[in-house]
Figure 1 (spheres, rainbow, N blue to C red):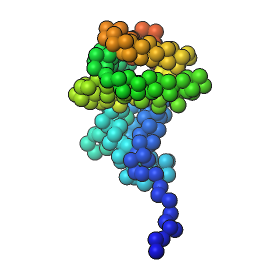
Figure 2 (figure 1 turned 90 degrees about the vertical axis):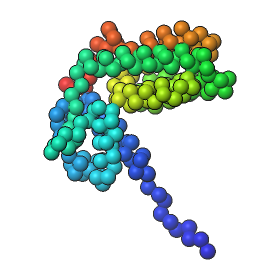
Figure 3 (figure 1 turned 45 degrees about the horizontal axis):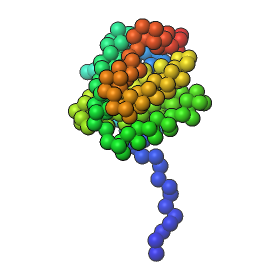
Length: 229
C-alpha cells in the first residue's frame, strides 16, 4: 500500500538560489552592499535564514554577471561598476537586440509570431497596474522570446549572457517615472515591425528601446543615487 503521508517538497535549491541572487543583486544596486564589501557566506546565510549551499550558488551566479568578484583570500566581494562602464554595456546590449529584431522580422515562423503577440499582451495588466516587479518578469520573457525567434543560437547565447549581467539595472529603470508606460508602447511598436517583417524598423525600435544614453541614462543614474542615498 502506498504511503501518502509524505511531507510536501520544499522549494528546489535552484529556485532558492535564484531568489537569493535577485535579492542580493538588488541590495548591491541599491548600495546596501557597497563596492569592495566582502560577502560572507555565513553572515548571508544567517541573514536570509538559509543554509550556505544556496548562498554559495547565488554568489557564483552573481560572479558570472560581474556584480561580484571572487578574490584570493577574501572570497566574494562586491564589484565596482562605473556609470561609464554601465553605459558601454547598454550600448552593446542595444546593438545585440537590434540584430535580434532584424533576424526575428526575417526568420520568425507564423507560430512564433503568434507567441510573440501573446507574450506582449500578457504584459498589459502589469502595465495598467504600473507594477514594476510584475512588469519586469513579463518584460524579461518578452525579450527572451525575441532572442529565441532569431533562429541564431550563438546570438541568443550572447544576448542571454549580457542580459543576465544587466538584469538588476534593467529591473531598476522600470521604477523611473513613466518608464513602464513608455516601455509597453515601445514593445508594441517592436512587435508590429516584426510581424510586418520590417527588418530595419524592428532593429531601430529595439535599439532605441534598450539604449540608455542621454536623458534615460541620467534618469537611471539618478535612480541609483536616490536609492543609495
